[in-house]
Length: 378
Image (cartoon, rainbow, N blue to C red):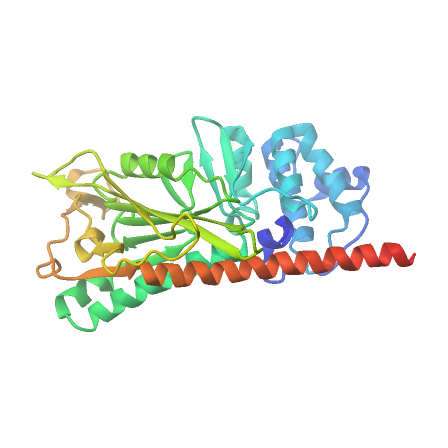
């Protein structure tokens, strides 16, 4: 999937995308000057956000990008914010070969413009405030999405089964949501978009986070896990990640390599200590299944419990009486229950991803063959 399609695949018809025209650079400036959003005192960042919205309207259209329309808009942005122009150009370039996990330098002001634009809700990315870097997560492969969605579904399915058997667990799980690709902030200018997270509606942060990484991703799971556990300590209990890749043996058979990593905060005397790390190999060096009935992803139901009080403002003043402290949930009887995604289940999911990967390779090869044949005929 190319970068453009990945960025806009979930979008519906945009009200401004039903028509397209060639726009000259002077016409772009004229449109801005005559629009109701502009004034003589308008800041450059507001103009850049307006220009981004015009690009968004064109790029989210079902029709192929009209670069005669987009290019002058990009040039206008480039004169104001060149780093933002470079990111958007790469984002909407249908010929871009950027990976799912691609880093771009982006100043804080430019990040703020992107957040205010129509692009924001449709994009999946992380922003690192201290490094002034935006990491795009947009071009996820079908194999990545397959692992992500199937794993989230299996966990949710088991949680629902537990809820059906125990009233206390049902009440606890009623407020637990499972979100995929949702943005979250743990500081004013720092944003992350984990592959999936589990959190209670009345809590500030998730209690469990899952990330998927592939050989095409180059995602640093260890760094992400350390960061998550540090910034959300007391809320977040578990981070798990699956790192997988594909290769071919001497007989051209596709083989899968995959590892499950689990980081868990251990709670002793009410204090969180250094996270415990576990590594589980899913396929052996030959790419064959490892048989171990006891091994896999285990999540106790207590892993989904937030152990840190939260504070809510319920009034219109700044008095302490308007601040309510929400104590950690104390639900009895959760300990016996756990979610267990066995090694065999993980292997099934990953082999399904391998089939999708092979289908993409075959399709790409067929398109190349057709292109070569057309050239030969001409």
